[in-house]
Length: 194
Image (cartoon, rainbow, N blue to C red; front, side, top):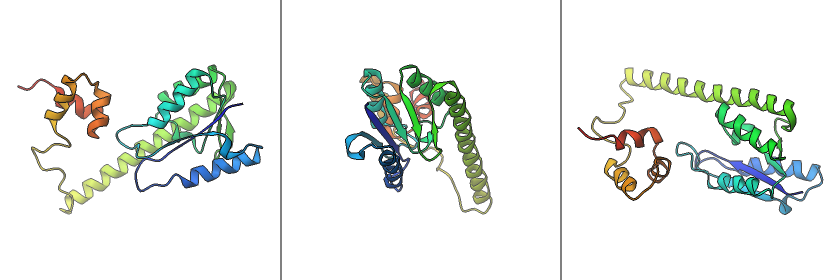
């Protein structure tokens, strides 16, 4: 049985060690050698959604070489309800067993899919709450004169560079990754100029 372990952190300041340790404990507790499984590790996946290790994991799933995927928490796979449910359904239909070690769940079968949907929904709500708290904090800082925001007329990246990459044949997602900006910002940069 081929086992894959997936770990992900959002920023450079975060460490993947605790995820690896918990997954390692689960493996040993279930009679598997952590050195004998495939590990997929993504770091700095925050705003760019650049997840090369996850893409490699997907390739192994599509190739049929992985039968079990072990993750630390379900939100390591996806923080969006629809994307996560679609992904898990696809994996389960391919005969892949998904184990979430900290939440102590095995997401196989219809009950597993239902539990996954609930947990992914909670992860999405947490993400929205975090954005609301951030916006509230920025509003307070603006009132106090501490937060000025970006200076008018400046950009997160170079719009000309975005257009240049488009001319080279890159897609919006690839341009966003290359420039470290959101796809929405790329679309704004690529709008015809008046």
